[in-house]
Structures are given as structure tokens and as C-alpha cells.
Amino acid sequence: MASQRIQESDLYEPVKALLEGQGYEVKGEIGAADVVACRSAEEVVIVELKTGFSLSLFHQAIERQAVTEAVYVAVPRGNGRQFLKALRNNMSLCRRLGVGLITVRMKDGFTEIHNDPAPYQPRRSKQKRGRLLREFARRVGDPTKGGSTRQGLMTAYRQDALRCVAVLHENGPSKAAEVARAASVEKARRLMADDHYGWFERVQTGIYALSPKGGEALQTYSEEIRRLGQAG
Image (cartoon, rainbow, N blue to C red; front, top):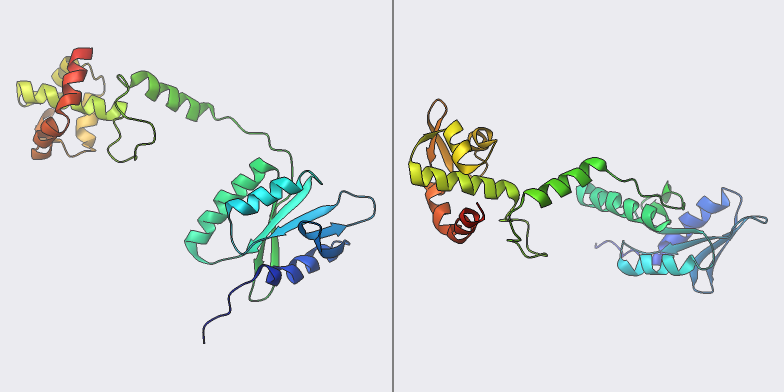
């Protein structure tokens, strides 16, 4: 027999029990709000119920913030890695929106508050900012349109690898130090040894040549190699 589809109203009783356990008086469908809870003269609590994370759920939560700062969203708790990933991502979104998050385990009504509403203060990462600016500075020109897929992205690292490809194509098997000097790629030895793209092969200690894939890269990225050569 197929399992019955979860309804938003199925979340109401577990969420109500959670709030009543904290001393709130709880009522459903007050105005536009799914759940409203009051406790003496404290800030009113509003909970929006949905059967899953969605843009409309967060739109509703933001609208309720015009009434109170204490706004939560509640969704059924799922299983597996996919749900846990969605939970982490949406917890992060909730924190940024200043919205609380509750999950309900439908088989037994167990409720869990993952975060409470609070003003969000973003934490800046100097490390991430540094990586971003270094990539910006190292990349030659603007070879990739914004919004392109990540696969095949023309990064500064790929540009360095193509410089090494061009040198090996012109000079044949060469010492890593010579490639580094001719290509103006300081870390050419490490780049060719790591061989992230499969373009290089070590023929002797410290000496590298193009692999068959490296030969293909000459054709695939011929325009970019030409442009890099012009940029010096």
C-alpha cells in the first residue's frame, strides 16, 4: 500500500506541542500565518509550515517578519545524504535571513529546532577573498563568460598549463626549469608533475614531454595559446 502524502497540516500538531511545551499558547491559521504562538508580553512567534524547502516558503517567512522578529519555518525531516545537504544549505540561508528552522520527523512527531531567529552578521573570509583576488590578478584577459559551466573553465592555472604545453610543443622534451623560464610559469615543475589535465609525461627525472592528450590540447586551445603568446 502506497504511503500517504504528507500535508502541511500534518506538521501542525508536532509544532504546536513543541511550542506548548515551552509555555506558549498556540493557534493555527491566524491571519496569513500558519502557526501563531503567544507567551505573556513576549514577542509573538510565527511558524510557516511546508512539506519541503522552497522559495515560496522563504518568501512567506520574510513577509511575516513585518509582524515579528520571531519567525520560523518548519519542514518534514527527510533521510539520506541529499536531505542532509539540503538541510545544511537551508540552515545557512535561514541564518542569513534571520529566520528560525524546525524539522519534524513524521513517523513519531519528533521536532528539532536547528536555529533560532537572530540578526545575521556575515563573517568575512580573508582566505577566500585572497584566493579570489589572486585568481583575478593571475588570469590573462577575460576568456570565460560569466555564467558558464565550471567544467573547462579557463582558470589562471589552466592558462599556466597551456603555456607549458606551448613550450614543450616548440622545444620538445625539456627540463622543468627550462619550461618554467620559457613559459614564465614559476611552478611549472609542480604543475607538470601533478599533471591535473593529463597533458604531460615525465620521460626522465626532471624532464617532461607532451602526452597524447597534450597534443590534443594544442588543437583544442589553439586560440587561447595564441592569445597567451601575444600577451607575453
